[in-house]
Amino acid sequence: MPPENDSLREFLGAAVDAANKAGQLIREKFYQTKHVEHKGEVDLVTETDKACEELIFNHLKQRYPSNKFIGEETSAAYGAVELTDEPTWIVDPIDGTTNFVHGFPFVCVSIGLTIGKVPTVGVVYNPIIEELFTGVRGQGAYLNGRPIKVSSQDELIKSLLATESGTTRDKSTIDAVTGRINSLLSKVRSLRISGSCALDICDVACGRIDLFYLNGYGGPWDAAAGAVIVTEAGGLVYDPSGKEFDITATRIAASNPLLKEVFVEALGHPQ
Image (cartoon, rainbow, N blue to C red; front, side):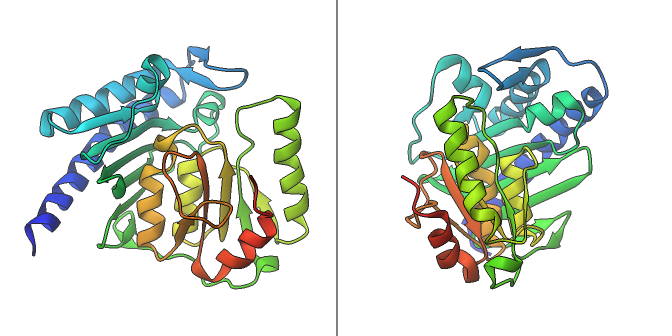
């Protein structure tokens, strides 16, 4: 096996260990009273978000002190960190914080590693329902150790679509979100809004969901891990306009390859 494969497996092992540590903390706190702060109108953060990010970064920094690190809570506190070509760990300690606060079990740890700005290793772990999604560039995608692949659905009208309502509540944004949903609902079988971008992408990867899109997610931490996993499961990640996916652009669509063109057309090329 080439040495780069060995090092990627090491990276994956470190990320899984970190996700398990954070997952244990999330599980412990899930059924307790949460201390909640507002980052925005409806965007929440808890003590557990901050504790998990610190725990994950401490674990990874011990192993890889020269790597770069971008985390949702760190970026929220200190401003966005520019993504470089250096190996960079991109972490969302709790994706689905609102679900966590409400005791709704779609909550996960998302740990992605980019190398040369390319998502290369991804771990998404839901510790409440015990699902661990993993992916390594060129080495496939797995759910709890079993290989996964995207659906083979090729008809939009028979497809299950996922999106998110976002955290912005001004009228023009809400109108854009609901308007797009309104136009899509007659073209697909049904819609799901589960509250976690990372888990939505993984649901496409394992074939539960056929299509996913989101305009204006929080930052690269929502998609860095999922992008590897869905791609390794045979899926496509792209901009909702059909252009190439840009991890820094906070716009994403994911689907199996058979649905991309018709889905982009149905989305109506959002600006």
